[in-house]
Length: 370
Image (cartoon, rainbow, N blue to C red):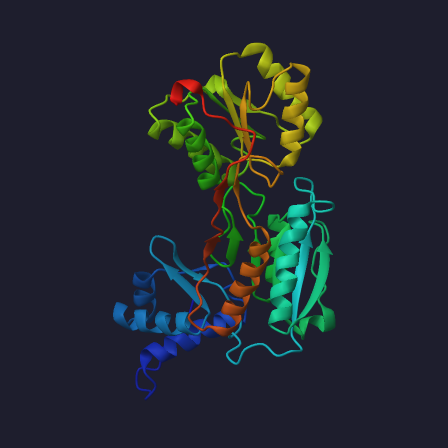
């Protein structure tokens, strides 16, 4: 990467010249959003100046909202144009990009509609306009109203894939994600992600079951290593067992490889043919898992909670669960987007919505633990 030469006899300070050079490369997309800028020591050699001078230039670009600097992550471009400093006008649009795909369903999903309702509420509170675009991974782009002239920023929700992220970046508009991207790793630190903690949900659920006296707790999931949040959930389960003085037993792990109730029920029935002696089951998943599990239990005459205590991660009436006010995810997403648009000191964050335990009638304390 070449940057040109500085004017060492100019009255303009060197750090300002360097900041201007890098800023221009960002605006011209020579250094794209999400791309890393070379390390300070390398820039120091390139420009022939001290590291302190480089630090001053990068500090200016960070303050103006072009880059984000984090230890062990490096310096990453987060914005190709200066942030709005005067706030958003009443004519500005916030565009909800409904991301469709094959993994997560948005149609008929109450949790998805709760998220969008939260977005709508906060947008109205800010006296902004709300528009919607439904985009599949194969669409190739996001067509914004008036070519994007009225669009302040984007809120991505649903089955977010890397293709959706690339399309959002092409708009050159700030964006925020509700939930993680369906990919092997978490997204680079160039945008806010508003979500819940899979680790915390699994950890607290399993810990609660351990406190009720359960020692053989089945962990049921879609596929442990497919997405990073599934690994986080699995780690939370194992951590709670460890802290409870219980050894992890891989034979108590059930992978269904599909969220459909029929597939879940079949996986559970196969597991029940092989395993006995467990007293509780936890799955960090949705109501489809609950229906599949209960179908298998019914066929085997297993009662909840008399025979097996059960927890899943969804707002099912009467279920013992870690409850999240999903509506607030939408509100938080808009708050973070407005923060990015109006605060020159904005930095991307992973915002985790706190949850709390709700005790229902699907779990019970074992008599030996009383």
